[in-house]
Image (tube, rainbow, N blue to C red; front, side, top):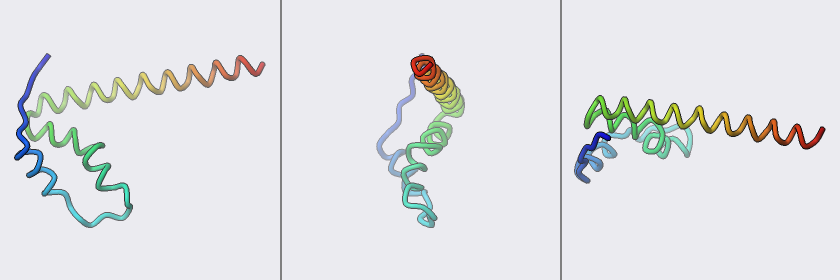
Length: 79
């Protein structure tokens, strides 16, 4: 497993470069927790950030599969 070190100063500098012109109330948090995490990791170490993005994609695929399985289970119970 790859390891990187991120200082609080790097995190603070990254957050300070966020824009302030948001259309929706949730957009600042999306910047931080959504694409922001990947963009930040890429800024620290591009390969690590790309690897993190791939892991998140795999996690999303697994969650979608679990959701589909649950829906199918409920449908089978109804029948």
